[in-house]
Length: 172
Image 1 (cartoon, rainbow, N blue to C red):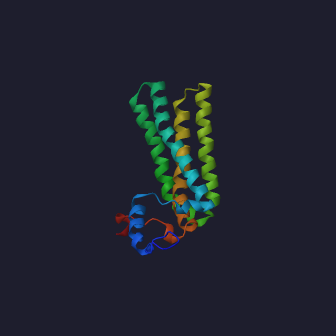
Image 2 (image 1 turned 90 degrees about the vertical axis):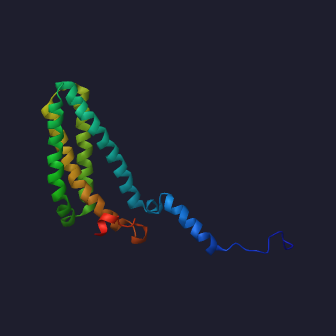
Image 3 (image 1 turned 60 degrees about the vertical axis):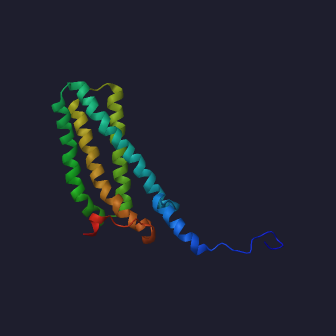
């Protein structure tokens, strides 16, 4: 120890670097959230994902309560799946041909409006399976357009060094 009370040995930052890297491997990397544009996209993704999961539970339950039939629940699932597939296939091309921010605003608004209409039909007691299936199809079409634009936007909002490495299946 010297007269100032410090040890004569200084900490070697290079020796601590492997320990920090090991810790980072197991912790979530929050550096991209420091960028306001990405943070807004991330928050809207969380809100949209929670809402879609609630819809995935509530709509089949409501259809089953109205009809008492599992076949109608399956038909509603099909009514949501077809627009999701069709619009997701076209969504990437649409996202490449127009401003992604504008597309995200339009599709997020569409998802929000259909969610509001779901709530309104439930609040009014309208027990219409066709209305539920139509709303579900519309919401899934908006989601199908939204997802490719959202995923493609990440690379423009976050520097490459902060993007996660590609998964094993994406490298092939």
